[in-house]
Length: 570
Image (cartoon, rainbow, N blue to C red; front, side):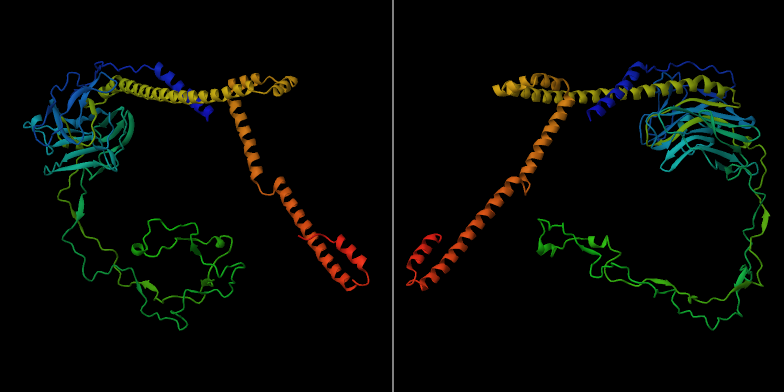
């Protein structure tokens, strides 16, 4: 255990060395160099700037601008959880996405995201709109960005498409949106739509979804040319049953519907060793009635039932029941066979009519409206969201420059700082482990010192004959103790061995049938045999005495001699 603790401590100390060598540099802010044309670019380097909070009382959360963790780069910050946030900024000039659309921004979830949005709304240009008047009904052209709550985890792509036919507005949702990345690093979200209506959704520069506005959104941008006639009803005499029962079929005479599907298997025999008298379950012999059991209130206590241990080695217990098998004569309920329906007309479908709302919008980007403002209008149960480097443009030149010149260096720096922070935590853990190991080592050292001190005392107290014996054997006991004091592992091994020897000796003394006990038993048996032999000789003497009494007159000397030789009774 001490070796494993030492190895763990060394490993953590190695991590601590790396941590102390790693410099948790703060990423400096450098104004991005952008040559591409932009309709809107917000870096928050000057604070909130034109970002104005909505006046609606619903938006109790107050967004601010702060430098994100491990960077000097400012971003729009969501400081509190369980709040609605509403803040927006207008574009210098409304942007028309007809010739292409690129939306891009960074989102950093410094405290994670349990439930809430981190998306942006790109509001439809409206001369009457003011940021202070923002609310949940403010129309948008595109909603784009991550959203997570419960099982929902996706990057929204929603267009509000205006029908060129009647001006009605309908939301078009990406069918298979990608999942967002949930960690504390800054992630870059990009939506690029080309004039040919092809699109890409990228996260950190990697393509996560691609397709066409015409094929990959629900409902589709262009409605179907024909629709079902809602006034068309299926005729009452319409037959859509393709098959019917054969009315001329009859049940065969030998068809027995009452025959069971299973019958007893007469060939089966009870397995050898089956325990007929043993129940499957028995009362648990180890169970005891609870001390607080009240028979008056709780009733008579019964031990819980457990599987009968006698049944484990047997093929079964209790009454043996003959198994069943499939009945070869079983046919079940008879049904008439099915035949083709001569009146069948096929499946009915409503007639198609021209869709009065049909249109063929070949350039849907022209029908989503111009973008006039960008809004963070969300509800979230998590704090710590930082939004930065919000971009609106017609092409990907500026987006690529922001990705390589602003986001990527920041991402690498924050990732490095996060790794350094983890290393610092590992260093602290290593120091704590080292402290614990030192405490354990100090305790072991004190114990070993007490043991060896006792050994030195025992060596000094040896009697003269023992000292002479060690001198004769050339055994330096103090040198032995010195070695044990310097090698605690050997000391513990010797102590364990000595303890084992003592324990074995105690067990041998306590075991029945030992040598001393056998000797006591043998002595008792011998004593009993001697006593029994003396009694037998006494009986023989009495028999002799009676016999000699009959001849007393004839042989008085022999009688006297017999009594003297008989054993004494008493």
